[in-house]
Image 1 (tube, helix red, strand yellow):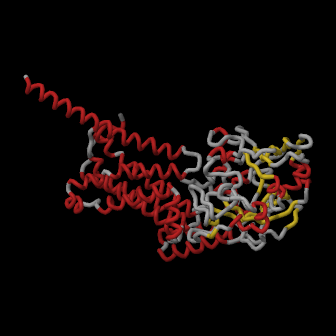
Image 2 (cartoon, rainbow over the protein chains, first blue to last red; image 1 turned 90 degrees about the vertical axis):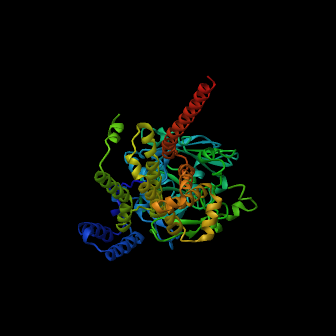
Image 3 (cartoon, chains in turn cyan, blue; image 1 turned 120 degrees about the vertical axis):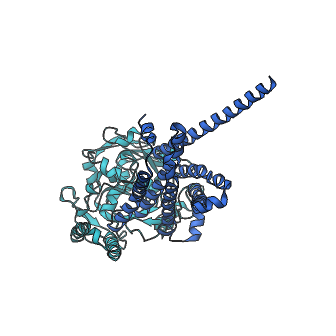
Amino acid sequence: MIILHKTDVSSSEITPKEIFEDRRRFIKQAGLGLLATSALAHSNLLLAANSTHHTTPVGYQSKSATALPNFTKTAYGKEEKLTSYEDVTTYNNFYEFGTSKSEPAVHSKLFKPYPWTVSIEGEVKKNKTIGIDEILKLAPLEERIYRMRCVEGWSMVIPWLGFPLAQLIKWAEPNANAKYVEFISLADSQQMPGINLPILDWPYVEGLRMDEAMNPLTLMAVGLYGEKLPNQNGAPMRLVVPWKYGFKGAKSIVKIRFTEKMPMTTWMKAGPREYGFYANVNPQVDHPRWTQSSEKRIGAGLFAGRIKTQMFNGYTEQVGQMYAGMDLRKNF
Amino acid sequence: MAIKQFFQHTPSRRQISWIKSTLFLLCLVPFTRLVWLGVYDGLGANPVEFVERSTGFWALLILLATLSLTPVRLLWGVTWQLQFRRMFGLMMFFYASLHITTYLWLDYGFDWADIIKDIIKHPYVLVGAAAYLLTVPLAVTSNQYMMQVLRQHWKQLHLSVYLIATLGVVHFWWLVKKDIREPLFYAVVLALLLGVRLYYKLRQMKLKVDRARKVKLSAVI
């Protein structure tokens, strides 16, 4: 059963304020007069409640304390309807903070993403480290609205803040042997209660082929909705690879290693039949557990149904050529 | 033991009907909560999943409650609690029906091509669907009239509840990605509930054999 910790949610920051406050008042009033409420009123409330949930925050305001002020908006996904800040920050898969979707938002409250150091190693000119403040200055920050498709059959639309991973790779100076990039997440049992459970082989490891990592779509994200990444979304720095299933996006990265051989990722180890290295969104290749031909859009409401999943999550034009000639059924 | 003492006080008819009504209303609390949350936008980011999980959980929990009534009789020799078996069973069917309706309607919008594909391709869905289909004849025959019609076959038919419960736990187990703690807990509870039955069944069989042997011996002498 999912227990939602509604009181911890700071949705007032993003849902247009008047709607948000109105909803609260609405609930209070409705709660008082509940016993007297007729069935008809109920159905009206249902519609009203759903429509607030549908509402896309048009002009959002970010928290001033954590705002990332200097970024440029881009054309990426500007036609998409954003998933609400509330949903983006309370429905998370981040097993280091617990395996249910609502746990990361609760259990990551005391997590300290600053200061933060990332070490660069493996097939590079020389090993080095870089602090998060330097990373933030490495390249101009852009806002990109990407679709995110989870392997479990749901999706969101998120306005990320970050810069192309290629910029960081250029700075890292990999040598000619570097064919793959490995991303290693923090595994600190003091700050991350989930690490104490042997559910996955910690630390969380993900990887990309060099050309995938250098693809202009691949983003090193440091924020969302105009502010620094909330802890539950992978603060202070995470990978976003929009044409792949969400689990490829390693969170709270502490190490980037360049390798000659294909890295063994955490989910490949956990279920080799279920999770492959590529994990490209592909409606034709089913997961043993979940249908991949359609998906549920988060925030669309109880009666919205499913939408068709697109090949490469709709990014074929930008990434399709990298997989030309590959059997995607085998290389799932 | 406290449980033994609790059950050994046999309630009066009036008390039984009070307990029954209370349990009935308690069983409806999760449903009422879902309606409430649905109306007031409290089902979270993925409301369909929320309803699916919740109804599935309660169907399984109430089924385990149904299956715990007989072990109480076997262990402590009390029988009054068996009067709640039908109500629990039908409540389980109610939640299982809500569960499958949510899946067919809210999740898949009655897209039968997709539904059939989902059932065939994914073992956990197949197991769940099988479990539900097996509950239908039990629900239909859970009344006095059908008991009279079926006579001794009624009991045989209702033995399938053990299979249903097992499929239910397997369904949950296979659906979980990696953290199996919760389904493991239900598997252990189910194993205990079935284990008690098996123990008494075997003991009964042994007693019969022993008695038959004694009779034979005395006949020889």
